[in-house]
Length: 288
Image (tube, rainbow, N blue to C red; front, side, top):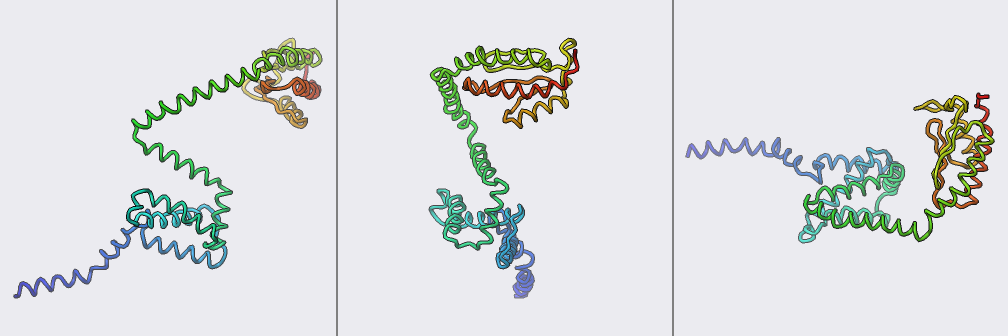
C-alpha cells in the first residue's frame, strides 16, 4: 500500500510538468509545412495587422511570408484529406485555392496588391516555374532520366537541326547571303575603303564581313589597341547608333554581319549609313 501511495506521489509532479516543457515542445514540433505552429500563429497575426491597416508591404520579406503561409496552409489541408491526399492534393490545393480566393476577391485587396506588385517587380513567377521544373527533373530516377533524355531530347534536337537546314534550303537563305555578299556588301565595302583612309583592310564572305580600322595605313597602326577600345571606336558606335545602325566591334575591327535574309535595299541602306559614320571617324586618321 505504501509503495502504491509513493508511486502516485511520484506521478503527480510529472503530471504537473505535462505542458511545460514537454507539452510546449510538442506544440512547437507540430508544423504547418516547415513552419512551427507558434510561429505560424504569430505570422498570421502580423499579416492580419498589416491587412487591417490596409497597407501591406510588397518587399521580399513580406512576400516570402505571404506566399509561404498561404502555400503551406493549403498544402497542409490537402495532406490531411483522405484518399485525395494520395493523388497530390497538397500541390493542387496550394495552387488552386489561392487562385480561387483571389479570383472571387475573398482575400483583402492590400494582400493581393502586395503579392501582385512583388511578382511583377521581381519576375518571381519565372523563378517559381524554373524551380518546379528543375526540382521535378532532379527528383526523377537517374536511370529513367538518362533514358528519357536519349529517347526524347536527342531526336528532338536532331529534328530541329534538320528542319532548320530544310527551311534554309527551301527559302534560299544561303544563296541570298552569297548573292548579297558578292553583289552588294563586298563591292560596297571596297568602295568605302577607297574613300575612307581609316579602313585598312576589307575581308569577308557571304553575309560575314569585317573592316580593320587603322590610324595610319602605312604602319597599319590600329585605331584601337589590342584588348581595348578607343575614343575613335566609341565615336563610331555612337554615330552609327544615332543613325539607327547597330554595330558589332571588337578592338579596332568593325564587323559587318547582317542577317542572312537581308535584302539588297537593306544592305544598301546600311552601307550608306556606314559611309556617313566613317566620314566622321576619318577625323581620327593621322597617316599621310
